[in-house]
Length: 113
Image (cartoon, rainbow, N blue to C red; front, side, top):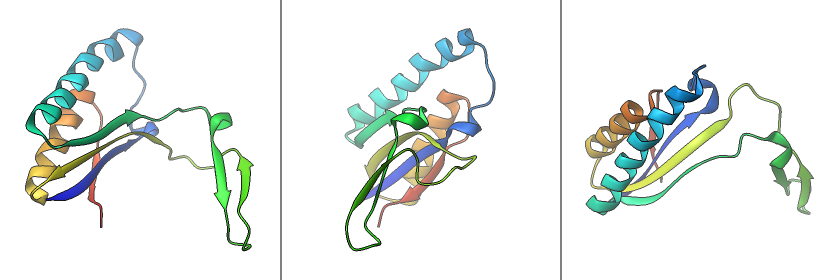
């Protein structure tokens, strides 16, 4: 079994009204519940979008320095992630497809090595 990261950048979500998002939540939760029932779910969560809530830890100087805010301004910010433990790429891709369908926006999937 291998761990896989399924994630999306917040910018991939697109502009939708609150009703649209309200419809997607139960669909996404159902996929997560299916992952849990299948015994493949390790972790799933959304990520706080507030840059002021972020912090950066940098030890390149030899001493850890913690700074408020993101490491660097960027147009791409992780919006959510799921970690699964499955047998192979094909199975991970199937779960990523289900997540993408439920959420209504693209997901990227990568093996954790």
